[in-house]
Image (cartoon, rainbow, N blue to C red):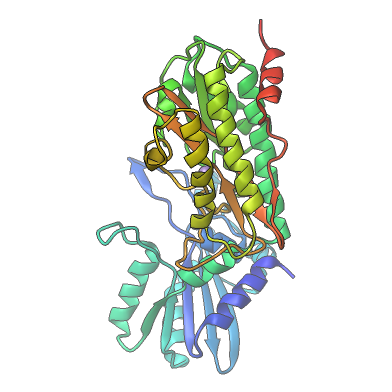
Length: 414
Ligand SMILES: [Mn+2]
């Protein structure tokens, strides 16, 4: 069965009897004059339909007479077709989503009003989330407020949590898509690395990475971080303006996408192709921490517990290497978590209170070590699938050992 069909059935099962859910793919957002920002589909909508187009609406209905699904798509517009091309047609939308009832957007408001009236509904579900109380309202929330005013008896609830729970566990197809994204990242990273040398700019490294992505018809999963020297101590450094200096390291945190699924990889390379002893010390400690986390991962653990594994290693190794004076100073050289979920979003859904690792979850493992005093920052990040007994590393092909990195870079030395 089409995965999107299964997912909608899961959502419908979780809905109360006498309820309707309305979800939006999202609109084109105006940038300036007649230009808009590139369209980015609402990931939950995409997850439930497989459709990637603006202005689509999904309606799920659960009543005593059964479960129903409707999809509303844009009306044919011959003039717009001449300018921007065709929008999705019913047959295609039906095939991709598995929704049989595909209707025209112009019928949406009347269909919705009639559906609410005729079925004596008591629940409306929307999909919305908030980062702050004053943040911009999502379409789902605005819609929920509007309908609640028109139908005060209708109780409005949020489906976001339920959909996010589903998204946490990846299907084999999703894992495969993440692997594809990782492979594109691998190729692009090696292209960038083959041209890495002192005197070039951080943004040129990004350009080399993006060149391969463009050839693979892929996008950046997030703004690439190309942080050389002390810039690596700024976790999300994305200005990428500095000239690369002989003897310094460059930290690259980057990822490609494949069918909206993201890769998220970090590597740290010596700009001249050879690590100094001190750089090797930093690198080896981070690698040791990463290996320890790989070994620790199993169902039932929390991301917080994985982070403790890193700190335990650092408490010993960083003091021995005199990176910090004592273990109480760890937070000055390591100030982020070791893992986040990965999927349709780079920082994927799953940060749900009390949620522990389960087979089928995909997470990053990315310990880092950043000494502003020494001007050295190292981060090593791979993507892993949580399995029944442990984990499978999804990015094993990406250069990582000191030896492999130096050998690879040596080939390109003039
Ligand atoms: Mn990451």
